[in-house]
Image (cartoon, rainbow, N blue to C red):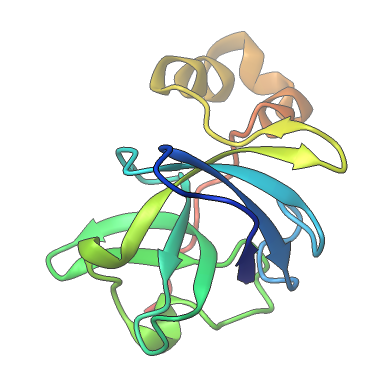
Length: 145
């Protein structure tokens, strides 16, 4: 998923305009998201990074796992393979930040805390997957190589 940067500057936050279908159903073409630059990345987070082969291109993907040479980043849309399956792990220095929330057109949180994620995926709350999805907790990613 390519993006257009709406704003940045010296602040640790920026608004990004999402372009393309690779992060459906989480994000759609035309969504505006809030990014925290320099935020700590963990598996499951939606991240903004510079494409390893075209560093002028900003991309949004989900962090699947940390590997020795960088982050393995995957599309949420299983039909799209323009991700780490195509270009390999993304070096840490190209990962710019974490997408915190969708601002427009319909606000949604995309960066739950660890304790909230655990609460929504185990115990009684796990029986309400719609609640987990609404609060930014998604199914585990397939780590296809």
